[in-house]
Length: 157
Image 1 (cartoon, one colour):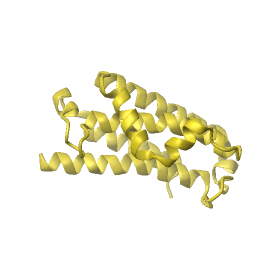
Image 2 (cartoon, rainbow, N blue to C red):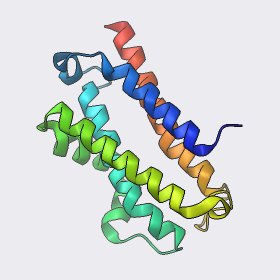
Image 3 (cartoon, rainbow, N blue to C red):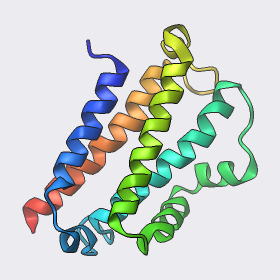
Image 4 (cartoon, one colour):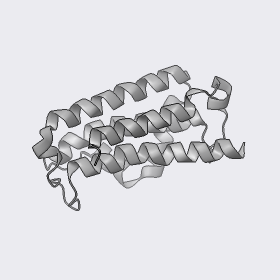
């Protein structure tokens, strides 16, 4: 069985491979994935990672989320819209850089938890799975979901 780190790195590499050969025009064309461009999807992922980096330490400490994080947790459509809009005017290379920085930070955070903590049940209510499983689902699974959406959209184009 692959480690959670292998799974997360593998899915990120596959996502980046899926978009790596696209020209800037193709990356920024609206309406590729729903109303979003491929760049918007990448901006969404960058925003998601930023949110995760704020939420994970709080959840691991069993603390309640502050109002701004709780609202985004309860209204993902608004959260998605806001984070995509915040990055829409940014150059694609800056969005990719933000994604890379967030990815590295999440990997360092997870590695610093240590194996015992990483593979024990998460301490927040409603989550019986391990923290590793949570990361596998919400980081690797999130990348896979959007990679598949992008691949399907590009096949139709």
